[in-house]
Amino acid sequence: GGHGLVVGGSSRTGLLCELRRSIWMEKGSGEKASGASGSADGRKRAGENGTRDVLAEPGFYDNLIQKYATQQDSEQVNMKKLFQLGKTVVERPGVVLENAQFLQKELPKRLAKRLLDLQFLPYIVVINPNIKRVYEAYYNGFQKLRQFPPVADNATNVEFTQLLKRLVDEHGPLVESLAAGLRECKSKPVIGDQLKLDSFLNSMLTSRISRRVLAEQHIALQQKRQNFVGIVSTALDLKEAVEFAFIRAQQICIQTYGISPEIQLRGDTKAVISYIPTHLDYMLFELMKNALRATVERAIVSKMGVFNTKGTGKKSKSREEGGFMPPVVIQICQAKSDVTIKICDQGGGISEKAINKIWNYGYTTVDDAELMSSMPEKVKNSFDLTGSAPSPAGGAMGAMGGTMGGAGAG
Image 1 (cartoon, rainbow, N blue to C red):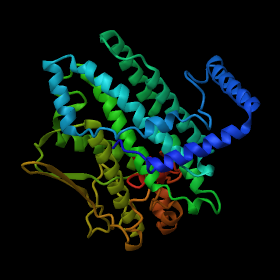
Image 2 (cartoon, one colour):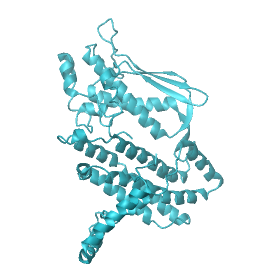
Image 3 (cartoon, helix red, strand yellow):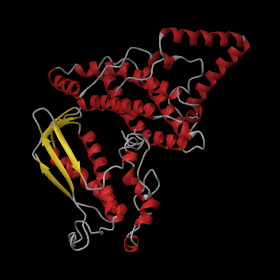
Image 4 (cartoon, rainbow, N blue to C red):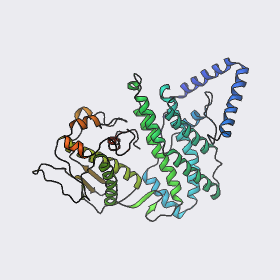
């Protein structure tokens, strides 16, 4: 998850450096001095006005990001390594300091690779205010981590851990800025259709997950929690996880449509696994939103009927009585070495023409106007489809639709 875009080959890197050196030499000593002082003034002002804690944006001749981004590949970290690291801490507390020292080297490299990816974007994308916000936050985090004193004892580790907590919190909303910026760029006339950003987004979001896991694991290793090894739960009850995700997805469905199907949970309902709870919850929640939305919309469009949900005291009609909303069936299948959670709905499936688009970031099948035009009048009048749950898309449907293919995933 930490690999980024690297400038291809030492010869190309040398050529670029030589070209930049030639341009620089042509400028003359006066301009060089002016540029240097201007850069220093910019750094000073950035600290004085309180807008940034560290240096301002790098200039054209600042190759620091390229230097870090082209260092050796980032170390791969998987669930097994996280688990082993957490268990080792109990036996050898010094591992916490070693992990902090590892993160001091690893995290700046990973951030530099993402900064380099941002530098490779087309100009129209780079100047977008939301994308600039992401770049500045990443550069700020990169500099803070790079300039932090070496972690040599428990006192500096405490300060380093506090820094990680702040960066995790500060970078939390950035995925929304990234999504908003790319959505605005894609909506640009002429230019938007020419932008191919899926590979960039994949790198950005995959790296974001890996960085957060590394930082949160280090923070959690210093907190004692029952049935947890760092951020990994050793006793994650799948039945409870499914039900928790469903309750929240159902609430959004009711806020959006006024109705929601129920779920039927089957299979190995006593299954317990070791996993990161927040990651499983995110996946279940997003998939259930999709399943509930598809089920409700198919019921509405096909005029199969609309029914009150649990808690209203009213029962759903049978198919013979003129209406039916099938439940979403969730099957837990536990094998010797893995577990499968199958979510099955009767929402009509994916059309053949859309099958090649569903993994594209930003693609959605949500269409308020189309759904409204298909609804029976009695259904339109029974609840409001335009003024409920807020969402990045701006409409009630967006809250249910910004799921698997949305730029906000991850």
